[in-house]
Length: 261
Image (cartoon, rainbow, N blue to C red; front, side):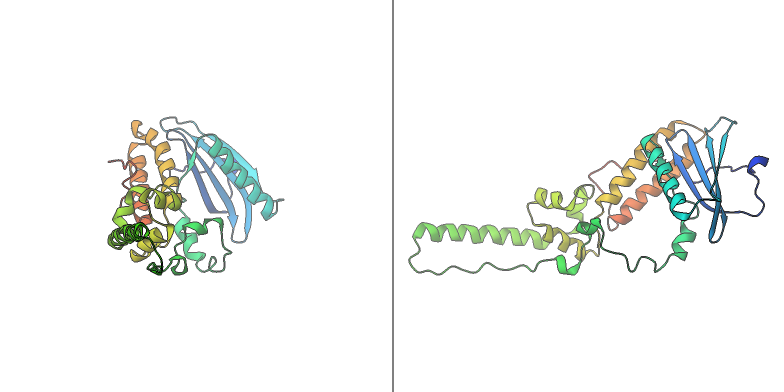
């Protein structure tokens, strides 16, 4: 969500040869902090930080010069800036230029190393093949042991029948919690949950994405009370909630509150 107006830079920050390479916008629901990175393709020259509150005509500007900084130093500055905003209770908004960079970066992530989020990946190799229990030999088995075996087979059969009927809709209450915890609550194995997801063509467990959007929405709700930010806040909340539905294979995550805005 971009701010309604981005006025011409005052003379101390005027740069005729620069392009806006990126916009990083943070909000706490009532105040917006915008960092613009200026430069040209292949070169970052400086950043302009603007702090603004809707309804307040005054704005604070700050310029950060990157001319004598290497890429790692610039990256470190941006990381520290975002971490500081997070500590202060701000969330980062969608970059207006993100679609542009998504298009340009196509293929760059195809050779990525395996990350810590692999537990959420649902690959075909992860899904264990259901195996029917092999009957034990009858030699010298006591009658009570045979009865116990019958009970076990009946139980396993009922579980197998329940698992066979499971759909993605049966998981919608649990999309906001880890996949292993979901399996425990449903009294099935993690492989069963992954198998259900694969049938519905859901190849990554959505918990991390859902929790991230939940946190953003919690912060944005403050802006609904302000007439100056209500409409843009409402649109951003709707976008984040629609994203969650997409992360969950087209189903609403019924285990969390979805705002009607």
